[in-house]
Image 1 (spheres, helix red, strand yellow):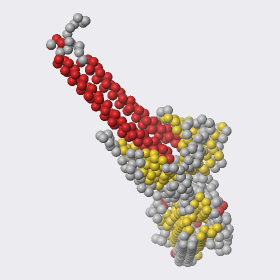
Image 2 (cartoon, chains in turn cyan, green; image 1 turned 90 degrees about the horizontal axis):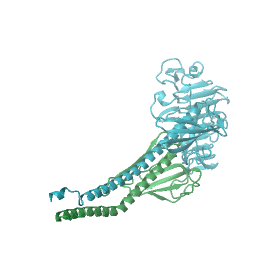
Image 3 (cartoon, rainbow over the protein chains, first blue to last red; image 1 turned 90 degrees about the vertical axis):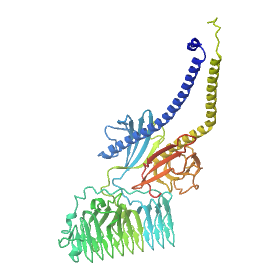
Length: 432
Length: 185
């Protein structure tokens, strides 16, 4: 018996072998299943990486073409081949590689970039337009990027556009083409009327204000040596000093405040303001034949909080040509802020370019604009939101339509980004 | 060896039989459990695969989106580019802008409805709604973060419940919209 127990005959060896094989089979299935699962996960990660690499290539191309001195042509060492510039390549530190193609055109650019990472390839197509030399009011004289609200007998005679709704309440009237955002509409109620012009749907954009170096290189020194003051000089305040040269707490840095029947005449120039307030029958006259650009700096640069009124015209105050002059060219340009709200408030019988025969532009793509209480405006308006209230009237001068945005950024702004199907086979933008 | 008359003792046979029974029993038990759980595992696996596909498609649609809104965590609207001959028509075609609505129910399934760009709410101007995922633990799927000046970041969370001793599975992703917003919703 003891001798038999030490022998290797019997079922012990085959049983153990069978169990070992069975265990291996089970373990192998688990390993294969795990590898399959991880393969999907790693491919998902590679797909994201490939997309990121392709986007990196597209943005590198955008930077190169934005910084190029000459637009609408290929940037060296790329050369034109057909309508596309020759391909450029690049490598990222993570091992990803990209190739991009550029098709420069008049005022626009198309970039196709293909990224590859661990054998996974993705392609993106990016179209951008140049904001340089843009005429923002060519098609529409009144633009409220987010919305336009006409309230209480408001009257707008202009082609009008917004990306949101145009809401019309309480006997308001809109005459002119009205373009609203996709899925939005002109919504009249309470006897409001859109009584002439067609209703359209589409998208409208307003490039940001580029004030260049006007913060330091400007004509602010005109105050008060070359800006004749009418009325009591102590009622005019600029940059912490009144018209008599005395220190005043009525205005802060780059603030112009005029009150109580006083007025001031502005000659041609580029001015950098933080705030302009005209109160109680005050006025800013524009000198005959003058071209005036007033840049309102960002609230951050001016040390303001959110909700500041950077332009406030109240109580029968006016901005208008001097005397019977008609030949003036005035634009108020608001830099605004992405994080701090800014407001333009034209209220209580104010008149801005009441004769409606000259260029007069308020361009404030990041500020809200409110016209109320019998205010009268003529020119062209661009703002984030526009609220026309209480018998306010807007008409558009034909010359204001031709206003060209000064110092507009010499760069391309992306307006379409899509992914393409598969790698490049024919034209770079095929299947995009 | 051929002349060896030695056989197995009773004890050896008993041990071998007992071991054999234990082995066969455990194998049958494992097999039975596998057969019983296979449909459930397959269904769960299919749901997870659906969820991964949905997450991938949703990420792409968000990436190419210009506008998004989410009135609550179970609903999402995206205005985005899709390669379609016509919005709502599954036939592939040139890339165009469509409005897509995702709606997840308390039963744990989500549907996708593709509409024309001007559609404010389905079903007007929309194709058929299709179920894109099922078996979720809840319908709290979308988290919408508006960003100035109107851009948005949307994160998605597809959670599957723990079942019969298996762990819960959650698939999460987040994407920032790449196209400039058109204003409004």
